[in-house]
Image (cartoon, rainbow, N blue to C red):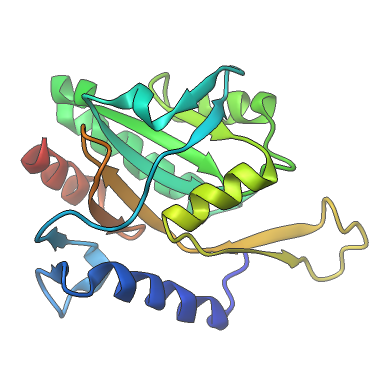
Length: 204
């Protein structure tokens, strides 16, 4: 993944937008831990209808009654995305039986390359409970907008293939959506499995 400094600006704007008046940090000196507390419902998220990694239509209403832990990324990401998904998997393992109340969801920001087949192969690395979602470019842009996701293609240096030779700069946020479909919390990708599991335990 490209990690240019300019990417930090929209990321910080994203956090500020979600935090204004609704969230505060538990510790201002340790924001990298992703320990964020909500004071109410966040105006982030919304209805979506996409296609899962098995080729079936899936929407937000299909997960009512359970929490969704959502991460936006892409399968060609070399480091941050697989690391974050592994943290999700580890945290859910630590929940034990309570993990059944949380659906881990991966929504691609690169639908042109992340087909259902690609997602199906990718999801195998993180466990059978993970749900991979893709869709048309328009569908993905719509859900990105609702969750205030920053995602921009960047041509890789030295690549002559404009289709295969690109990465995607994007914000790295985990969203916790409640059983009623409302977003209740979010976490930095830097959160540890232990801290994530602890907070999920408290929420569910």
